[in-house]
Length: 424
Image (cartoon, rainbow, N blue to C red; front, top):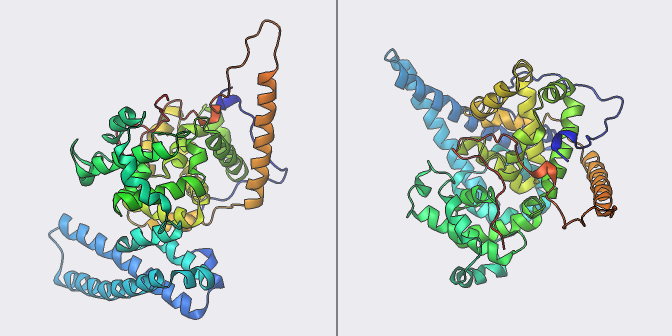
């Protein structure tokens, strides 16, 4: 059964299109209304820091591109940078306190912590905060890591082939003998040995690669193990890829419910959801956006899980609905490759804000999960019915919705992400 013929989620009669959103300025997400005045003041400071960062970046681009800058503009830029340095110092103090008082923040300041993470974790704190978020700081498997590296894995050949295509333009991973490629190979090989059912699946290397940009390989290994165990990633990367089929099914429901006209257009062009959304779920937008934007999404994923992938994905479609409605299949493919990845380069906060304007109902998602499980169970029953003269089914098949794009859409990287496995 192909994705195009897969049963679509049933919509309620009152489903309607959500209006296109005007481009907002960077501002706190909706949960901030429940915070205290002191907490709102803190968020306002972070908002000002983000604004100054954006203004400083634009100012530098303007100075580089024109010789007509006045002295006053230079003074203004200098003043903005001075204010920014004070705010950055406050941010360092704040996140240092959060890391040192982690349990207190998780128990008593959860709403504020959520808002701060949505604003972006400072680069120098990502290693420790990501480990704290997924409880990877004291894992017994860390002690096994050095021994795992001494063992051989049936996935080694495939891993070696793929690591050269993981962040090929990033300095850390450039070159066959680079440190980045070596530690990436180590972590992927070690995981393939502790989880032989999953082994290795292309796409996961981008997630591990991002972790290695922030922390040593032993710590990256522990975080990846936790992500696979607790964040639905293991289910996404299992050989059947059934979880990816579920995610596509749930995303299609949101698309039909909130953007019915765009959904109709996609169907009329045979532009199936898996053609653009599979890599969103498999690589968490790491092959879609430039790293500064993708890392902001990953910050939120570490705290809120796959919900952010649904939110960001639908937000992208909302923002681009008018343009996409005017394109045929080939035009949409090009648009997803060339335009969408760079729309939020200058202000990732706008992407986050739009993501939290998307309607997301956890209860509906749970209902869809049960509906999808029942549908797949019925399909399995039909498959195992032995008909006269028909061969006996040869075991479970890969979920059709999880096969990835029929015409894969690469992100900023030259190779498209598609599931490949080394036979065991």
